[in-house]
Amino acid sequence: MPKNKISKEKSIRHAKTMTEIVISLVLLGAGGFFVRNAMKEASTVQSSPYFDDKDIAVTDVENTSVPDPNQIIYESRSVDTKDKFRGDLILVNEDHEYFGGDEDLVSIIEMNSENERTCFTAVDSTYTILRQVYEPMAQMIQDFSDQYNNDRLIIYGSYRTKEFQQQLYDDDVAQSEDGKSTKVAKAGFSEHESGLAFDFTEADNYDYDGTGDYAWINANCYKYGFIVRYTKSKEKITKIQDEPWHFRYVGIPHAYYMDSNDLCLEEYIDLIRKHPYDGEHLEFKDDKDTEYEVYFVASDDGAEKTTVPVPNGVRYEISGNNVDGFIVTVYKNQKPLVEEAPTKSFEDTSEENTENTTGDEETTDDGSDKTEE
Ligand SMILES: [Zn+2]
Image (tube, rainbow, N blue to C red; front, side, top):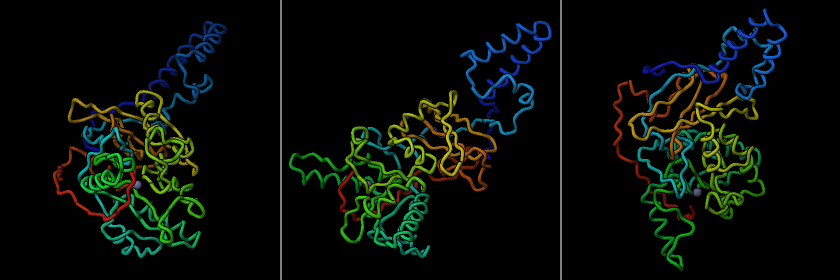
């Protein structure tokens, strides 16, 4: 629970509701004197574009005079403005560089061994991935493996250091005829550097194309929080070739929304930007009927801190978008997780913060010779 509550404020929507109630009560009061006119006006008010909240009906006046206990109350939270470069929803592409350095990584093979998982492997134990990505990835593969009796998947690309990305790029340029790399992102511009992405291959042909039994993974990955990041139909937007083997973690709500609305990450980040805190939030349910509310808060780029409105007493997550601000994901009707934590970089700044932000970057030389993005 953040200690540094700067202020409490009710949501815009709530303010709107209250305004409507007041106006409606006034109208009802006037009705005592001018019944016919008041009824006319009430219907006028209801249909006015000025009050466009469809949930409000004149007949609700009596019921809504008692504050709705489910109404979300927002409070302000102060976050480091530079944290807009962190989180599960960062957009990394040729226009948006990844600025990392203190990723919390785990070795895939070591984690498999600790968890006695034998349904898949990685090329070797230097292959690492963000800690929070390992479990959903492993669970997805486990479910696939159980269903198709297949333990031949191999993680062929995962976290890469900037140096390793540079090496891949240089190798690709050296092999090309025109001195240009068409398949490998420049150092700093690959999702693999974030630890949020991984590539599959399989032990029989070393060629994962997401067809046959493997189509199950590409079709169901959203249930585990992953998207197939580069598809043929979005090639013009992502500027990356079709890559059915490359999966990117974004979290379940967002993977679900992108999958069901056929959006790539570039499009989704743009869409969320059109749902600012002060406007209409993006509200949806997933296929398990979990309700979400998502909104955007622009970063205060001139300042060290940005104030982000967050719900009080309701589970939420904040992620930077790596472009111009923060995305807040509200798990409506869910209480905050006890251990919930704001990812490491979003620690309450009023707490004593002894974290060493210049800690040594864990360098991992994954020996992959895969040459793509
Ligand atoms: Zn990849």
